[in-house]
Image (cartoon, rainbow, N blue to C red; front, side, top):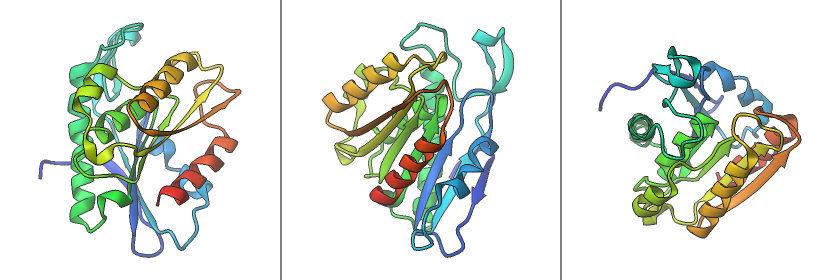
Length: 219
């Protein structure tokens, strides 16, 4: 197996029976969502391993070429920019999926989760994965390049549960872009659960409670 990206792992008190691979947003790192593990309040009867990879450092065009952790570079108002980076990042995430399977976690006990850019990669990876996953969580995010997704999606993950949540006042990724992604996913046959909140590009307490319910349902 190729070398994994740097990452953080949080093990449950008991032997893990499921895994969540959680991808951060632009300019953050794996530590960004580390505190959410305790906030989710998952029951002890559901021992979950959380994995938080760090995206590679790369120059970002909209930030004047400044280098920061990012899953892809992109051009504002372009529907398909960043495609090569997105494909490469999805390949990196697949390595984590394969490692979890090697460690004895069945694919249908693995959730891919991501915020913003991380959500793009979670969707990109999960919808194309050849083994059925437990579900995908996409927070404040969107579906990249729906036409290629339609051509490349796998039968194994048709109708997979997908939870999407978004802020109605998000200045970074307008809610209409996320809503369009939701409609495309429904059209392609996915089981989409949608939540929106009066907030910006962030996560709120009510949202964390819904995430916890989603995790417990699909696992």
